[in-house]
Length: 448
Image 1: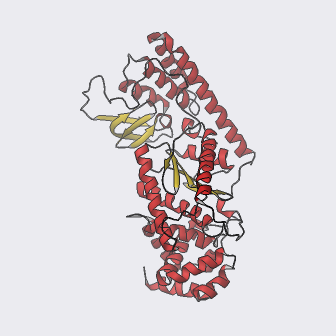
Image 2: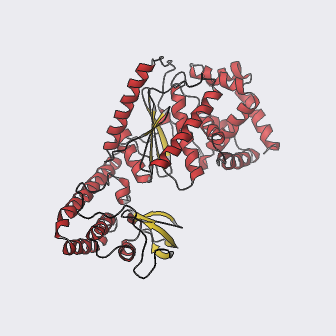
Image 3: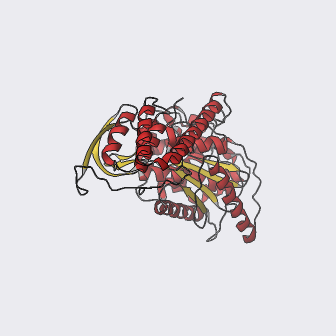
């Protein structure tokens, strides 16, 4: 199993402060180009994909431009060697050391990069012999990353990690006890301590952005973290309206912890180390519950709207864990409701556009809606072939809320209290599951 270099693990700055330290994002200059000129670049990714574009910024970890953000470890090591030298100040010992670090990290997946890494380190020492200590620290850092990767791969190979969805855990319909504000404050301190311990497992130390309901930890720029944390507070307000919570009521135990990483492999590593869970490549984020505690873990997709949709979806799972009781709704409603909230929580949400077309096509092709309602986390059948469970469940929940919003709320409360979902449907929503499916199917045969 191949994992992508430093982004998967505890790769942090070397513990030794270099004698000469360039800015994190040095000016993009080429020896033969003025700083105001755009720089056209061509390079290959490690998987062979060729990219051409305009480079706007670079730093010791990667490059930015019209092609988005690309980490050095994602590039073909031969092009790292060529491009970095064009951009750097060739008289800077620390920049040669950072080039060596980038190449040494590349060598974890591209062994041929080690030779040029040693060349870069040799040039570093020729320019400044005092940099030997920094080079030693870099070697220790990369060795630690390699060991962590091997441990993760060994755990996966020996099937020590859980593979079922965290939502598959069965919970009893036992109401959460009310706690005082003093107890809430103490619980928030516990959540902060838990989050710090989890982050330390992957070599990170992050100060959270704290909002009324969330502790938001991310390796994104702090301003961006604050933006997304505010979006989650808006989402919470929407849910509070749906369930008629009193204004300002916090149903979380302390506050919900949100982890958002710039890279998928770091998200996957935290899943393994903190939650003993193997996150499939297709998974973008997950919600975990530990008793009354809620933790949500994501990686940052390039598309803002797609990222926001997943962020809201998984955080809704955390909210629903704490709403009245931890009892789950049936799988189709659990996932359909999370999608519904994601579709209404922010402007231009892609959820409706993505789900509606696929779901309607399934229904009009004669798809078996009852089969979708019987899919399960536990037997691995959810979300069905081509993940059809998501669009069908989204459409069904949306129709229920649109036509009978108060009945839907009462149905949710009845299921959370322990009543069988089909019986609750008859008692609180006023229809049997058979009649609901018939109504749902007829509606979408003629309505988009």
